[in-house]
Length: 244
Length: 92
Length: 302
Image 1 (tube, helix red, strand yellow):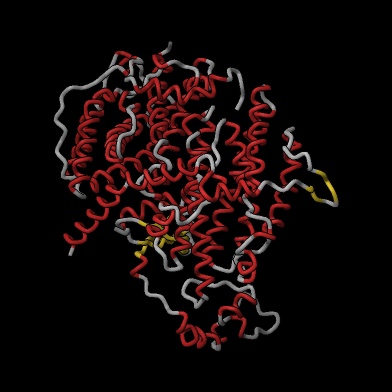
Image 2: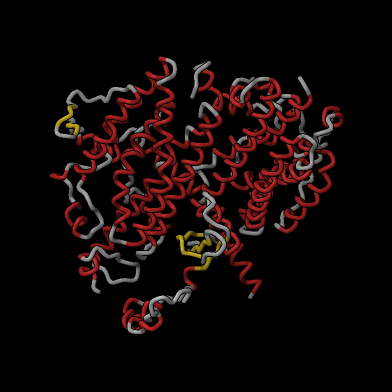
C-alpha cells in the first residue's frame, strides 16, 4: 500500500471513529443546547472523515463507504484515544480537549502541505476544530472549577485518557519519508503547552501517568473497537452490493 | 437550580441590524454566545451574535401602550410620504 | 386593542398582552407537548445514526436529529414567553404529567423505518405545522416558521431513502414495504382523534390556535401521500382506499390503539421516557457545575 494512502487513512479513521463516538451523545447530552453543540462537532468530524476517506479511496479505486464499511478491524488505523467508549461528560470533554488540540495543530501545519487535496481539507477543518478546542476548553474550565463532584470527575477524565495521548504524536518511518505529511512528533511540545495551560486554569492536577498505550496506527485496537465497528458496519454488510 | 434565560439577536448579514431570533438557557454569557452560535446559526444565518440576559431587558408594558406609542401616531411629518413633491423633481 | 378584538382581526397576541387564562394554559400545554415531541422524537431516529448504512446517510441523519433538538429548543423558548420555565416543563415531561406525540412510542426496527419516519411522520407533521405558522400567538407562530423552513429537507430525505430502497435489491424493497405497513396507521393517528371525539378543538379554533380540524388535516395528508406511494411502487396497507371526487377515501385507523398508546401502553413508552430521564439525571452534575462556576466568576468580578 502506498504511503499517501496509509497516511490519509490514519487521519480519516481518527475523524470517523471520533464522529461515531460524538454522535452517541446526541439525545443524551446534559442539556438541549449541548445536544445541538455536540451535533455540530460530530458533523464536522464526519465531514472531515468523508473528505479524507474519499481522497484515500481515490488513490486505490475505492469509495468512502468501501473504506468505512468493508474494512476489518485490523485495517483501521485510528488512534485508540478515538475509539474508547464514551464515559461521562467530563471524560468526553477531556477527550475532545486532547484530540481537538492535536487536530488543530496538525491541520494548521497540513494547510501548507504540497499535496493540494490534503492542504484543502486541512484549510477547512482547521477552522472547525478551533471551535472544538474552544468548546472543550470552556467545559474543562467549568467542570474543573465548578463543584466538588465535577472537579473529581473532570480530573478522572483527564487522568484516564492521558495514557492514550502519546500515540497521537508517534513518529514512524512513513511520516518521515512522506514529504506531504506532517510528522506529528513535531507538534507535541505545542500541544503539551496548550493542554497543560487549560488544565492548570481548570484547577485540576496535571495527569502524572507515564505509561502510554500504542498500536492503533498498526491496526491494533482496544477490545471496544470490535463493538464499535459491528454497529457501524452491520447494515451495510448485511446487504453487500446494495445502494443506500 | 435554574440556568438563566438569554435572548439572542443575530445580524444575518453585513449592513443589517441584529434581529431577535429566540432565546436559550446558559450558565453564563460566554456559554450563551457559544450556544447561540450552535443553535441559531446552523445554516449560516449570521455574521454576528448578541446575547442579553432576559432579566436585564426592560420592556414597555402593554398597559403603557397608549401613552408610549400613540403620541408617535400623529407625527406624520416624520414620514417622507407626508410631503408633496412637485412633479418633475427627482432624487429628493 | 383588547384580546378578542385582536383575534377577530386575525392579529397576533404577544407575550405581555392581556389574555384569558384558558388561552394561556392551552398554549402552554400545546407548545410544551410539541417541544417534548421534538426531543423525544430524537430517539427513534437517533439510535440509527451509529448504524446508518452509508456515510452520506449518517451525516444527513445526524443533521436531522440535531435539528430536532434545535426545534425543541425554539419551542420551549416560545412556551417560556408565557411565564413558565423550561426546567419545570421538563419535569412535567419526566414525571409523565405532560405528553408527547404518541408516534414516537413505536420502534424503529430497520433502516427503512428511518425513511418512513421522514416521509410519513415528518410529512404528517408538516401538514399539522404549516397552519401553525399563522397561529394567533406570535412567539409560537414565529417558532413554527423557523421549524417549517428547516424541516423542508426532513421529509425529502425520508422519501429519498425509500426511493433508493424501492429501486434497490428485492430485500431492500421488502424492507420499505414492511416499514410502510407498520407506519401508515400510526401516521394517520398523528392528527389526533376524529373531530367527533376531539375535546379541545372547538375552543382552539375560536382562539386562532388551530386553523383546521383533525379530519381535514388527515384527509389532506392522505391525498398528498397516496400518489407518492405510487411513485415508490409501494402498497398503502388499506383495502378500503378509493379515489373519489378528488379525494382518497380511506379506512379510519383503530383509535382504541391511539388511546392505548397515549395511556402509556405503546411498545416504547417506557423506554423513551427512561432514556430521557437518564440523560437529564446523568447531566445534573454538569449543569450544577456550570452554575457554580458562573456564580464563582461573578463573585470574583464583584
